[in-house]
Image 1 (cartoon, rainbow, N blue to C red):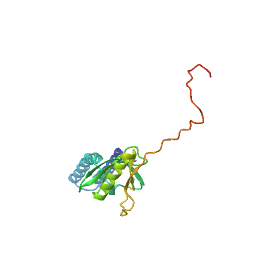
Image 2 (cartoon, rainbow, N blue to C red):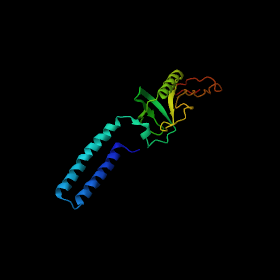
Image 3 (cartoon, rainbow, N blue to C red):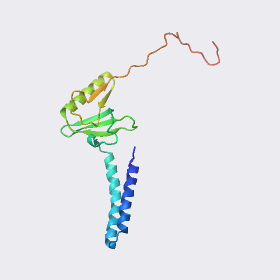
Image 4 (cartoon, helix red, strand yellow):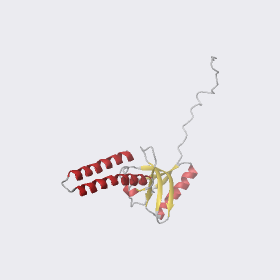
Length: 171
């Protein structure tokens, strides 16, 4: 995964390369100074814009790092009519959840609410199929409630009752 500091380091390197090229060109000193000043002002602006984007949900159509994800767990959602469906997704293989926004669709919002209701009743979680695939196939629901997993079987019937033995006493 690429972090913000790695992206900013690449941005600094590219801005530095552009500044170096502008200084080496056979231009007037004023043009070279303006190019160097522009590159210097570009760096805080690039960092501020990257930090600001961290707090905003990404449209699912712009996801290209995790676009091959088959499923995701929906940790939370907020629906804003005629604006979008904001989702907090836990993707497989990633430690931290991510914020995304789906384009507004009444049908999608209703299916998400139905899945949330059934997940709450069954004690499971809401899952999303193909979160980054623009699907025209409405036959298979995009959101569904994953039922709670069964507890492991108890295999103590063949062992008989268990008794506590204090330390230092042999049976």
